[in-house]
Length: 255
Ligand code: FES
Image 1 (cartoon, rainbow, N blue to C red):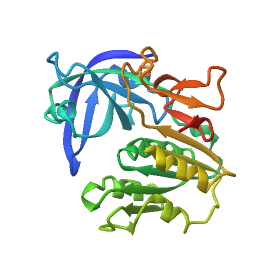
Image 2: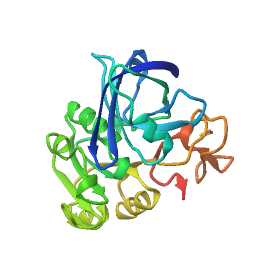
Image 3: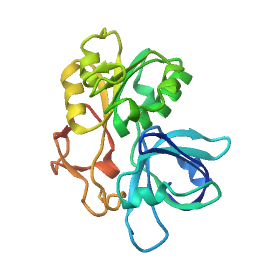
Image 4: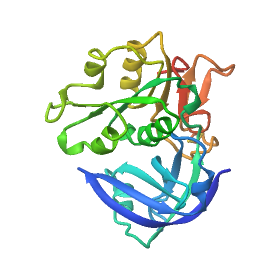
């Protein structure tokens, strides 16, 4: 069930250049159903900026009723959010959308992420590992200063890093790494910019895949049509990324 709650900040820190990790506590945590769902965060208590920002969930701890989000502070709204400290409260609406279907993986999964699309793959990797599924992580960033959670992913499985400028790991994009890796997996999950998702689908036309789309959003709950995409699979030819997604099986969204 979707809830709106003033959640308590328990930790906030900058984990890479302009990338913040924010942990909050509250009952909304118990409503989370799958990795890849997101929340809509009201970034400031003043009327301006009024809009909420969609932020993905990087990790969930049901025992302590806490979850962690990772976001890039790049505009006025998210910069204000980055100033919140432990003990402050944040107005959060969620959980929103449909997450990654963990049960679809059989033995081995590739998790492929780019930039701020990497965070939801961390909770996914934890849940797949807990089910005994081997995970391989292929993660792309702009540069060394933008890399985060490398050690955390390494603790869960084989991890490959690409940076656009070559300052860490393989120079280039995640697709450069995919070309070098065996295709000995049954399912892939991917989250990141649309061109990256397209390239991943092209790389594995014969595999089962699930893609999480990043889209501009307004309401986050299916009411405003800000996030519509064309699709191959619906009678109306349009789907809403916020409420029908953000995760779709490969081949469903026309970008
Ligand atoms: Fe409003 Fe999706 S953001 S319908």
